[in-house]
Image (cartoon, rainbow, N blue to C red):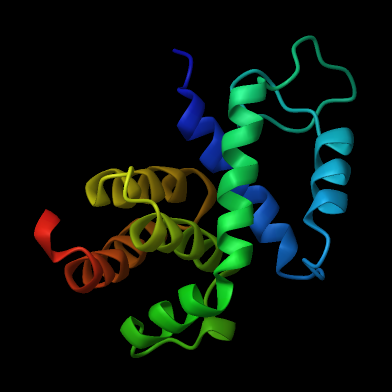
Length: 157
């Protein structure tokens, strides 16, 4: 079963956001160029990078991933402030990197993407977390994003 454009975009955005934790994000275009030119994934996006590939990532997937990364980067201070507000027992620097990257991505969608229903942002983060995170990731992500969404999008609850 082929995954949708948005799921693929979120998975790729997660990988880029994860990488940005150790880099200066002042020039996202350089980061994007490096990412797209150096990493080739199997058709399902989840596979290991390949030396050779038959089909490039579709432009729709790539554009969506870049939009998400730009949004997270542009609003990172506010996103981290909100995550810290609701993660009472966890400092950002103590969170697993995948979990923090997923939280940043989903929190961006909750706060700044009114075209994405809260339930979709949370569910996508949980599903992607099942793939890339630990066994604790889905419940951790769910609990924190639920708290964030109740405050920032209460009309959807």
